[in-house]
Length: 99
Length: 199
Image (cartoon, rainbow over all chains, first blue to last red; front, side):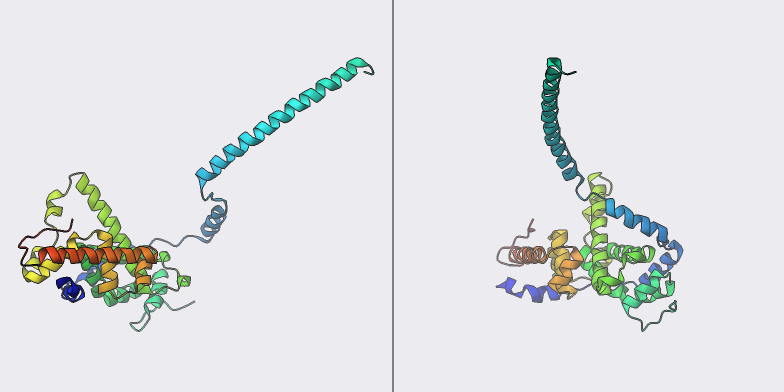
């Protein structure tokens, strides 16, 4: 079958000859375009420092923060009501006598 | 401090180090050494001479303008690494082209841009068929075939150049070969007499 000869067929593919001036054109263009200056040393240090505080998955962090906030908030709410109860019983005790 | 003088005997990797230090001479040596090779790869990826020239030029200018993208500690061969630059530039250019086409900007250019007229006249019938077969392949499949089949990269090197996992590259190659075989079956079987593309 013909497709058994796929590799042989692809091998027949030719490429046109490169224009002789292509390399020189690239070199010339580069000469006039200049290089980007390398980052300054302090810049590299700053970049390193910033990379330490970069949040890899901000959306996950925000979602986790919200969930944690709700859970802690609910717990704190319970704590406050308990404190209120304690406080009221404390007042009750005071009303009863020694303050 | 090392010397900024480059010589034609320097390895590609040494030349890249010199380019990072601003040596235009090292850049010139590297460009003269590899332009033919990478033009071939670029032509096989794009199927157009002019586009291939622009692609090679863009890729070389990128390493000249931003030489810091080359890292010594990567341990990569320059050529394998440069294929990656070439592939990425090709993707960028294709995206820009697509955007311009979607904006109805260069439709007449794209419609007949598969092969330049000069190349067309120089091609025989068989070459034309091969070019047509390659042209109907999706961009990434064509790149995978170019790197593995024509440029002789190992699958692992080609995967690295395309920024893919090995399995993904192998899958691309399989689909590309299947597409080409289908094209051959439909377009090169004289009994069928019809010609149509695979997609």
